[in-house]
Length: 458
Image (cartoon, rainbow, N blue to C red; front, side, top):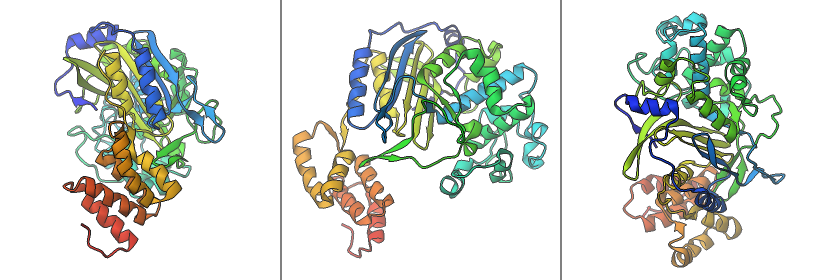
């Protein structure tokens, strides 16, 4: 969603950012339009959570949708807490910079200065700054084969956990390239503990949460009872499922903070007002692209909205059962926060609200055909769903999303459920609608093989 900023941010952009000046002026009150759009997204099963939109210090819109707990039908509220996944990186980066200002860390420190047991062959040449800007070259442990199913579900000693990636060959020489991942930010958490003599959680409270007054933000330890924390779910074409378990020790300082939309808004204002990071140069470096479109724990880019370019700073997060976005628009001084506990793609919600904030029409919201046909399959079988497709196209053609991605999503779901015959019929239907699409050939072949079919694929 970000367009890479190849050059440095202009001085005027930094001034606007740090002073909170609004360069584009306030759009007409969009709250009613945002509420109507979110209501439609929720009705179609495309959003379940909390949204907050603000300009400057003024909250324009702040509402909750759907359930925090589907089993007990407990609704989300504006003070529901969500796991924010990789938005955690922005907090970890801020904490590291605070420790640099406090003299406990230096940007030029290397890993082995604080973690002497780390392999010196790589740890002697990867600096704090390399870790912050994702230029360390360490492979992302989340990409290791079988990690999510075989490793992430168990509790780990955090200092032993790094053995999963500490001895791997670097993807590139530190500082020469960029690759987004979690390993470097996991190491930052351990380095913060060593530099402060405190747990990551305690350091977070001392340097960020308490000064910013964030009473609904903290470390989402798997062993803690956290009041008002939403349960995590996965939205499927046939409804909602409980999300797989992910132990906090497998996410740690790379992705294991929880928060509320209001706390994230308060943190954003406190950060950009210079109340946490005192040195403006460090704050400027944080929100200036250092490698690719990444600063210190945040993405920085530009988006063309209407006829104007907008400075966009923020981060997204995805973890089992949760997805999130925190976006700050530097020229207009808008803040947009999206929290979802059904791990929905938040891009549709983001672009819908963004356009309405800036006085532009929202993209069309159409009901996904995957959900409609999925419900028919569960009740009446795949053959009934295929027959129903023609009727649906005729009666609700303008209201539904019949894109190829929706059919692939539906077919992939049934492959994952161990129902290749159903998946094959769905991919056959998609092939009849999109006959020239090469993406379907491999899908058809895979489903056919799993189902044991020997007939030639059309």
